[in-house]
Image: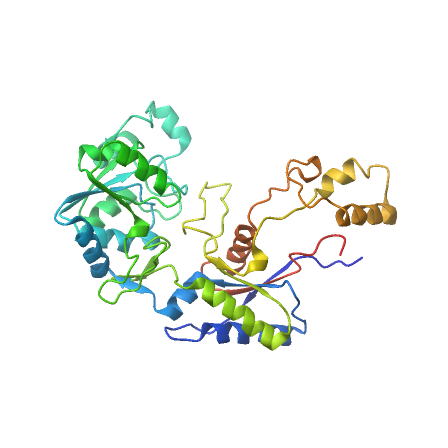
Length: 390
């Protein structure tokens, strides 16, 4: 038996700076790791590069003032409502400062008991015990504190109501009906990530004069700033106390060039992708990790689609229940080799959860690299497309 299955390796890299040739650096690091580790690179290996180092190499940054100017040009001297931002200093504090600076007055509306990615003010149990109806009840920041007491984030210890009030000098309300913001202003920025188009539609239907989403802010350069034509400030992270690093541009060009560089050096067709947050949810704290607009903004063609797998556990307990040892192994391999090309709604695939390959690979890459000081912004994944029959 071949005992080796999927392997995910973190690849250390130098500190990436603006203007660096990230294609060359990535290829150097991956080939160097293979040489150092005494293993070979193969067709269908996957090299994943975090969006953070690609954006840094591109110099895709923007200042608070540049965000403010773009917002001001879009809204003029108006009171603006900011609806459903996530609760994050890293993700949103500089964007919040820029928006607040670009408008006459800002009213921030937070959802409760948590934001869209699971950062909570209070537990669902505490909400139920309170008798509050989250579909209809609206609170000011002061009223929410009076009702629920300490609403600090479980892990960061931050009271985001107070933090956002102080950061932006704004008024904060808490509600879950997007149309509530229209009691304060008819000019609105939808700050949610994955539900932004639904939120925008609901607010427009309720009679707003102007509604934009975060992907419409810095979707073009302002005074020489970085930008992202597709995602704007979505996917951005705090860079300094006055700037953000945006989601990278031209990511598809990068992965295509990287694939060609690796082919030239190794003779192997290696799939390449850029990854951001992994698309997974923590079962204890309830936080859904995906604060980026997508898990992978770019990938080579071999990573399109979803897995088409049969459930070994089901087959072992049913079709192969009377077999054991080498006989069971041989029969299982034959079933895998002869499986249908499309197993959707087939009992043999039940429980395999065929998510997009890039979402699965981005999650594996994000968990491998971590978000701290491992120093591995490049991930090498081998044998991912290898099954029990190979």
